[in-house]
Image 1 (cartoon, rainbow, N blue to C red):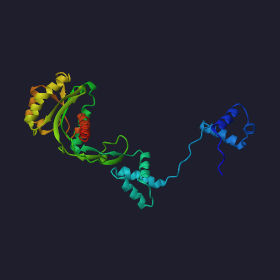
Image 2: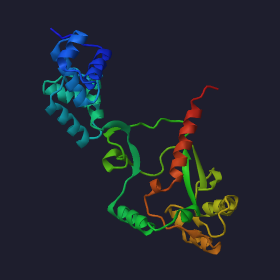
Image 3: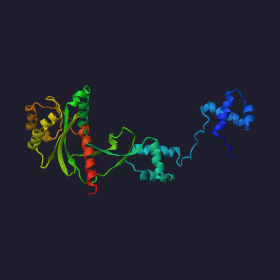
Image 4: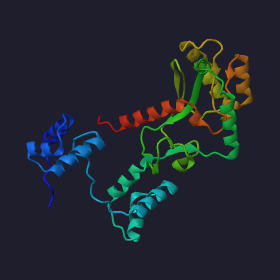
Length: 296
């Protein structure tokens, strides 16, 4: 039979009388409660520094400690495993539990379902070049990066549905190779644009209605690059960033930069994710897709 639980007020009174110098017996007689109860209340208040009710253990877990560890291990080793697969694997060893139970166990271990990020496929040479780029700019000041005019061409998808894939991962591990999906350039899209921006704001954005080649790329630069730098007040000694697309690195294009006295930032191959303009493009794509499904 469960013992009667006394109110917080009674427990506080017991503690108050004890601090005033009353013994267990006198407190028991004054409040008409067992001496053993007085002792328990005082001992608990000394141990936990409170007279409030302590948290009680919940319902025992449906899964054994071994099974919980195996679930966490499987999700960590195979980040793209689904809850259904984990549920089937536990059922095979005799533990039948709901998906939400499995999800809760993974959450407690720090693993959450997240959409995989699509990242360029990197060979070892690409990784070495990226590391060299990073180490060469370790000493750069924020003022140096404020002089950079970032640029890129991108396809804005007004319609279409890009499939999402979920992985189990911990915080700050989004860019780990096992948590990403490799991509290649030139996927589908509706319109192509060239755009640029700096820390001071956005520059020109140009819709591309033709197949881009070196000559047409230089036309875009001629008509928009210097004007963007002027609008953003970057000064004459700004640094221009572009990727290593062949039309960007063509001899005629590089001579154009030289004749215009424009410094071009050396850029590692397969590194669009290093360009902050990527964040602008992702936001722009999301907004475009949202607008495409609005009722007219």
